[in-house]
Length: 171
Image (cartoon, rainbow, N blue to C red; front, side, top):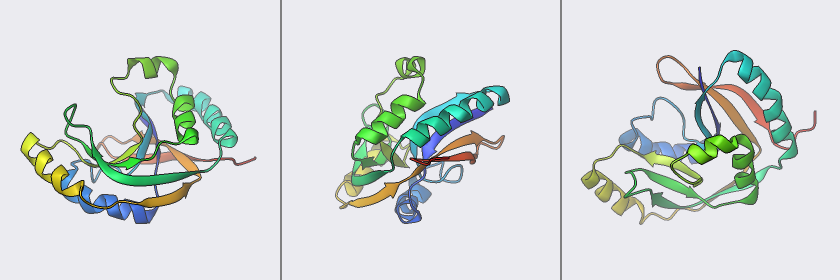
């Protein structure tokens, strides 16, 4: 089965992202707006049972942090993705490092750029038009993040939460 690890922001920020995603993101119906901490990976049920205590340890030892979205960005010319840019943050970077095995990081094509996708799979012309208007919008949203989620992908392509991990929680 395919799994991933993500942060879901507040409903307020999800509503902002979805106002664009409805029109410009073909994955709109498959997963709510999120910040990916670990890209999709295949794992067996046994591997997930071994991974879950590791994720609890990481979450328990990590502090809640401030997520600050401050502008609209794009990955163009690498690909035609438009996103809400998240200010880099030591706790977020550390979480990303801990949640990704070294071999997974070395095999990745891109560095970790914290973001929430709002448009993807656009033609070059569409990307240029949409990004041209979106980058003019003022974006300034800050909120406290106190959890991340382990997700799994259903047969129809939708993603759903397998388990939630609270940051700094002492059990």
